[in-house]
Image (cartoon, rainbow, N blue to C red; front, side, top):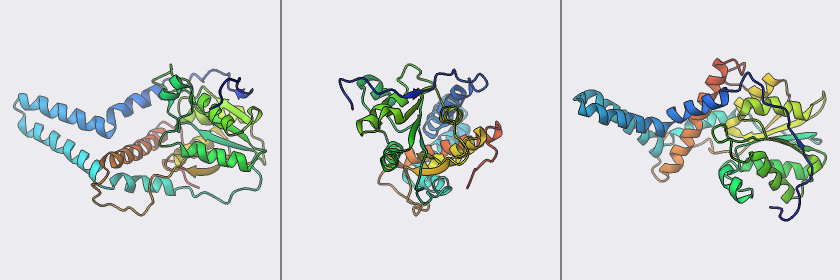
Length: 285
């Protein structure tokens, strides 16, 4: 972290978010809060407990049984890895281009709540996005680095993640004239729209898109919809691809975390497709 000096001048997004998708980031997050696996398990258990007092015991037992089955499969098997592997395998990282005009890195790799208070650049489990973007930026000193990462839709008081990302890149020698910040976007759709506005890509330029491998299909679909031609550059793999479907009792919290990420991404793909935000339910090369 750079201390005691003013951050270098960077290009920032100053335009207001478009009106059309204004509610979408909030609705999707609220929807996911209710249907994510652990939330569903808790809701089913509450419903089952309540119905037991109304002597609807067969319904109560069914709900409790479903909740326990969901929890057991998610926590003690490789279900999550099996579901996330097709997402991570959809785009293969190509041969690194000799010349790169710009690198777009999507948010999600920094601890927003911690960094908002402590002013650092603490990385979370998706921090490989930032690390890979930094590696590329150091290898290609001619490339701009565009960080697409605003505050969480349900926590607008937090510092935009792009600000912590700026501190991260400058700490490792990426000068301010190379950094472009999108501090407004609240979801991947706005990442794509605002990134195109800020980058102003022209024909023949090479822009790499860096995000988690599981997130790449939806991201590419949205960037295509926005008319921003990017080269997918997946990072932050969670599965080896060889796990298959088997019993795995040694790390239940990690198993259910991967299952949650995978189901959220598949839900996002279906939701974005049904609302016309991407042209294919599973965008590919």
